[in-house]
Length: 282
Image 1: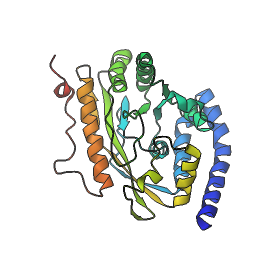
Image 2: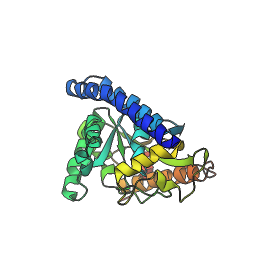
Image 3: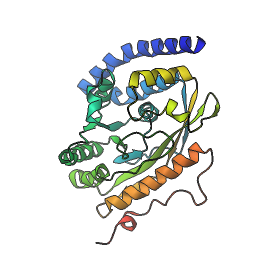
């Protein structure tokens, strides 16, 4: 009964601050106030606290702009984990825009919605991402294309990472910075989380969102480890597929190390090479 009481209290507390913050965010977005970027950071931090998620960070988001952050994706909680660390916008599947309440939250955080089933829309999405990057927004992309079970990193897709190139050509930038980031759910109730326990927080397949969310609130303290790689400078010579492969290797190395409670392998991550070193000779 105690976990349920704690969960009910946490949800009531989160609902109360949302009632205050949501109208303010709507107004701030409408009128372009600066608080529209900082208020979501505050709210997501409170949401993590209510759900019992504690975040440990290694490294830091790059200060350079334009900036694209490329991360693995295991749970709806990834959004709050990442958004609690910095002002940012996400690239999300178009269905998210229709979800009750969560769709509104996504719109108020100025998410970019992509129709994954229509490849013809990829160029339009990349162009929108490029424009937002040029405006100084940090854009977070989940290139796996779907969420995993939290025990692995799925292969990366390169299509939308090409928005970095588009930002260079559309915004007149010499280069764009792309940074790898990993999110790993590592401990439950203070103890290492096993492979079988990780789906308690990972949200994938045909899991129903309301029931899964309620389950996270019931389970008690969950530790999350976030790791950042070094930003990779990308220019017009950078090959998109080679860049995608480098980012995938970096995210996988950081995620697996975090899940197994160990430091990065000797030698660290695959080196963030200079842009021309990433280029394939055609």
